[in-house]
Amino acid sequence: MAIKVNQVLDAKGLACPMPIVKTRKAINELEPGQVIEVQATDKGSTADIQAWAKSTGQHYLGTVEEDHVLKHYLRKGSLDEEKEVAKHPYTIDLDSLRKKIEGDEKITLLDVREPAEFAFGHIPGAQHISLGELEERFEELNQEDDIYVICRTGHRSDMASRQLTEKGLSQVINVVPGMSEWQGAIEKE
Amino acid sequence: MTKVAIIAANGGLFDAYKVFNIATAAAASDAEVGIFFTFEGLNLIHNEANKNLPIPEGREHFQEGFQQANVPSIEELVTIAKDLDVKLIACQMTMDVMNLKKEDFIDGIEVGGTATFVEYAKDANISLTF
Image 1 (spheres, chains in turn blue, green):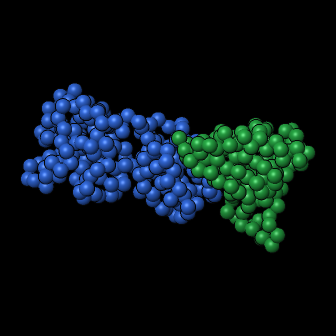
Image 2 (tube, helix red, strand yellow; image 1 turned 60 degrees about the horizontal axis):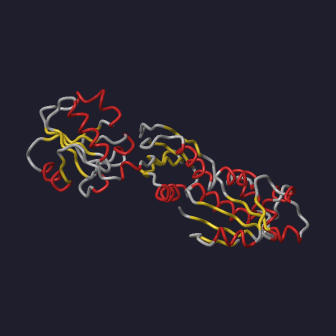
Image 3 (tube, chains in turn yellow, green; image 1 turned 120 degrees about the vertical axis):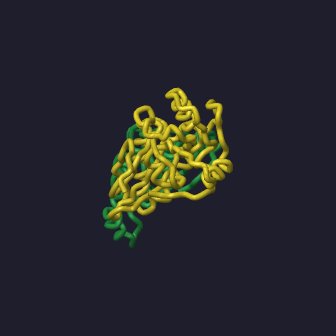
């Protein structure tokens, strides 16, 4: 599985605590919301990376093992996202979204998270265009549909919803809060 | 912010790894970390001694394991600890007893008495002794 990331850190062959120490330094160089892939062979790193992410406010996405190399995916935390600010006027909660998905009406569910976040779990049938690419790719959306926009916490999807409305799409609804609270079916790549 | 206070009172290689691994991991996790080096623990930051810390008798075969696992040297860990702003405090009283000067230690350490450590550790979330 090839996942698009902003940075790849090679921590292969390093023993504890070096994978964490190197990750700390690398994350400092990233912008909030960017994604890093940490490659490690230290078997303890899977547990450590998760604990570290929790204590430093990063978002652990998942780990893939390929040819005895552990690839850990992390997204740099962003304080803005933890605040609940909804500016787009049209929103829907997760229960109502679930009913829409299970219903007969045809809808477009647009997931605007980073590719690595999408790869580690999304709602089946969701279309993926990350927020950063929306400007260039919004025409791929079926503009006849109601478009439900989702991210992790509702922050990026709010920005995306407003961006799409500015592009002239009229039926755009922001899903709040987002994948962080989603209890329904999940599909992985 | 999590605050970690460590007392390093022993001077073997294993002691050094316990101290510096936890200190660097905690500092990399955004904790504030201070280590108070006393008695044989002073070896861990001594210019010469920390390049060749003793392995406990009968455990010499661990040396190979350290190399195979690619564990960083104590000197490297000390450098990382300093980069991550770990506060290194050498105990003045033991330095006097052992006739050691500040110049005998690596750069960037502080020298203080127990009161310095107590002041630092009074509101620590985690206190450890090695």
